[in-house]
Image (cartoon, rainbow, N blue to C red; front, side):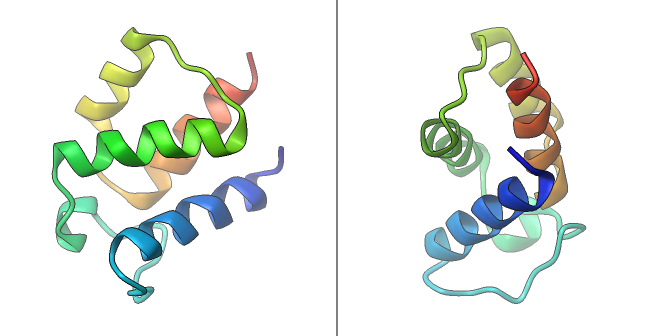
Length: 83
């Protein structure tokens, strides 16, 4: 799985969640997009499923606490994909 593939999947799902809005980049803060903790959790679970990844509960909890940007989500998915 390449970084570009993960990034594309993250952007696509966020855009879909935001009803087609795609005026954001990797450095955009998730709260600026109107996403709350529940939305971020949904993003993580959906993207793990879509990309065939599995993270431990501790890893997911850490991500929920530390994810602030779109890029944070991509980096997390790449990190768990390495195991």
